Image 1 (cartoon, rainbow, N blue to C red):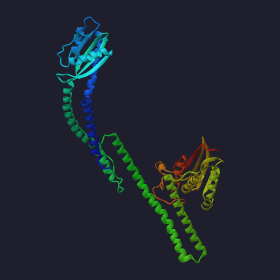
Image 2: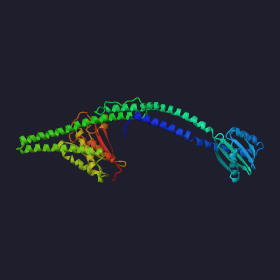
Image 3: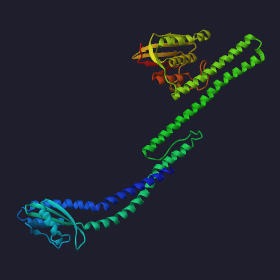
Image 4: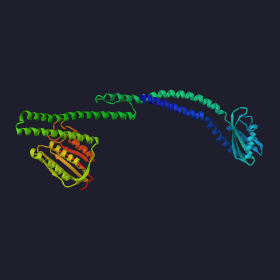
Length: 461
């Protein structure tokens, strides 16, 4: 399909619309005018016949009929027992009632027993069409009304000339108005298009602005500006994500390489040192593997490719198991995890909920205070339960609360590798809870600590 500009399309459609309207008027006023005029005349003389039937019984009906004949421009004849008792001026154009050509039709009608009849004949002298209507007033008495259809010819001729003039004027106006409307619509869109082209190379420092007063274009302008703002933020996050992932990859790779070279060149004969170097390599490989798994999991969740495998399980047992996993860390680095809970069965994806709780506890360990305490609570709420993980750290500023769920978001704006984990934990937590349609959130007080929580409703105890 051949492409064309919006302004040309608008102009063309308006031009075609105007042309179709004129053609419609032409058809209604010229081609169908004869039919409409004739039907109108038939209806008119039938009404006149009704009036004649009513006036005929009055004493001075002839004056009444003369008045009707003059006002309606028709010829009238009353026949009583085959004799004409009343007739208008027979010399009037279109009056064929007293002519020999119509007498046989009149006689045929009076003998037929019909109540009414309509004839359309050609005047022998004037060659114009004449409409004659006969009606039975009472036994032996008939009325005939005649009217000429001649005026329609002159009217049609006048209308044709008038419509040709109107057609030319309308098409010219359509051309001018079409151009004005098309420019009013297309020019703002062209401005928006040209502005959007500047974004191709990643330039988000643009503003969509037009002078249009069209509501839809103003809404499009606002939407595009919001989109640019969103893309700009995404671009910043993308750059930060690349930098952060690069940092997370570079450090373990450097350690792996360094320890591998030490084993190769120095400690390959010393079993104890060799084991230490190899353990470091294994730990860093595990860290890399965890990072890759988190990135893949997050990508799958955000794309909707992971389906939940819901089952009924005891949430209390799950939390205890996860807390126990951190026991080695507690013994090694002095962390203290206190858990308060009770048996409670829930319906959810067990592995995903385990991942949520693990990530929340891991996050609390990374950011808790100098006392290294972390509190985990299972609380009963209306229509369900609530899981809380609390640290005693420095807290989060109000302006940062809404962004902590983003990948690698840095509260202090300076990247720092967390003690444990990959920096994607809270983002994974958010996506899992959204998949389950569970409420979640965070409460934080500066200098006191931070509480992360999520709620599971409509569960089974």
